[in-house]
Length: 229
Image 1 (cartoon, rainbow, N blue to C red):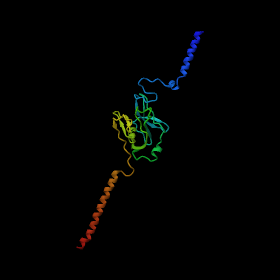
Image 2 (tube, rainbow, N blue to C red):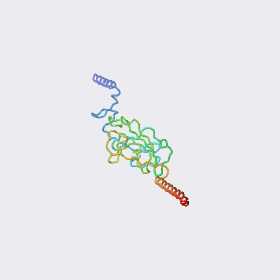
Image 3 (cartoon, one colour):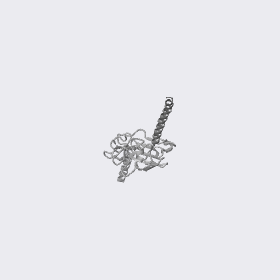
Image 4 (cartoon, rainbow, N blue to C red):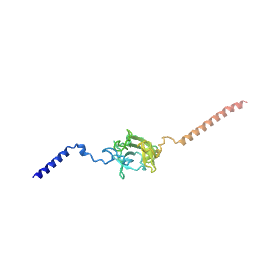
């Protein structure tokens, strides 16, 4: 009987000690030595830029080498991307092509695409000590019909790529990615109106007509004078 009382007393004391612990201590997971604090960005996590394309209701993963058609909405997001897993899609409200690019049509042989850039969460996605730009990018860009998702991004912001062609930096972010090569923007849409060669040809023809008229006028003026002699 005495032994049973001792066991019961020990259980009661243990339960009281457990309940006396603060709630954060009960909820917090163990922290590995040298590891990041709970909720902080993991300095060793893989981070990358990922491409997305809107289907009108949600973001779908896209290939930077794809060539989206006229009227598309594409997005880019910087985020933690574990090996073998895709990064996060752009946050915020899904933009519409009409609200970004209006109702204007593209010039012949060109397309217009709405481009949005999300620099990611400053706490969860940024490298420790790094701070993403305060605002993202939302622009309407124009390019040739075969312009890729990556080159359309380069029409909206400064883009750097590595040797494999992967986007590593957009508008200088992240700061630690200073290498790579700057990606050239997609060819802008040609302005509406007659082609440049046609304009140049018309100007040349006008100059010839003007010169001919001047010569003819001089001849007509000179003829009466010679007749009076």
